[in-house]
Length: 502
Image (cartoon, rainbow, N blue to C red; front, side, top):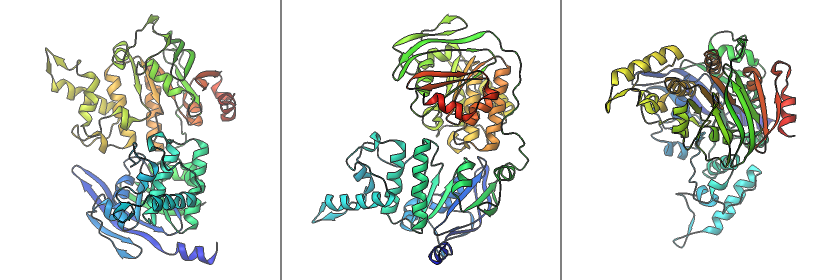
């Protein structure tokens, strides 16, 4: 490392000491201490609910801490809002990108800060500055393209460019690769390396520990609202990080499979077509966990939506226990006994501003109603049973779904569908944005559902997850099944990739 690099990294861009923050019924941060240096990539890891999101919001000004010290570049900071944080040089990029989809890339970059000349927006200046900031990132994006027409990776680069245009010196990324392909993630890592060389302080939050071990200069671990410490790169192994995160040794990442004999065929899909799906057939037996693997765009999610009745099929049949189903809508699928936990639980699965109880009851109102009247006592009793059975951590039935951690949001969705007595459960990216400890709990729940005789379908972009959880795997490419793996124990990621690109 050069003398200049040492000088950059000696500057504390952000310093937190003794930060604590509470909400009604929840103590989100008990005690947090952190030092983020200029010119470093600093990772924060921890289970869902450890306090990471609240800590980010304290740094950006979205939440005022109840106590402790926040300094930016050596000066005490009292940030009253995210706008104040931006003015101070702190920008955060969340999973839900803060862009206006209908507007162009250029307009998004300068929204609210348009350069003017003689009382008119100076489009030439916008174009010049936009090209310069995108060139700094090493990416080429059509400035006139509507943001909604861009891929997720390009939208993310627009967000980063917008932050740099505002002269951000601290960049916070929250689960930045959750929706990216491997190639897109590699491009993002290259961009972050360039920003580090430019002296930008990067705070990187991710559940993907392989990424953290690869790109982070230092890593801070949080548990139960406290920072346990900060370690230099190469100091801890992945297993040691996991153990500190969950507070116990995690000897196996995936539960042992039950090995119980499978039951009769429950779900059968024959020559299903619609959208990018082109003639897919498969069957799942009672007690079986079937995996659907493939690269982004292979058609896995679209296949699940066809089975669930969310998209209209152009051909093919779906049978449940031998009976052909007419699925004109998800309501038809739910009534038949099929449920889908979507890959985007925040946008498509939950009403984030409504309570956990309301989200749980949403597809079950008929079960709790008599003669048009909702029996709230029955609803609450059923919810309480699932909270206890699933280990759902919720401050109370009134707590909004948006306040729950990713793992608990997923458990809330599982509770909802268990109450419907569904026989076929389709999980689309079941552990996206979920920490290692909560993942294990979700895997246990999936195995328990299989032991109850339900047919399980898992769609996952994480090949180790498919290999670790499923009994059988189908691999898709371009809307078709390109291969089947029955000997999962003897299969490898390389074999899955071969079939995915076949």
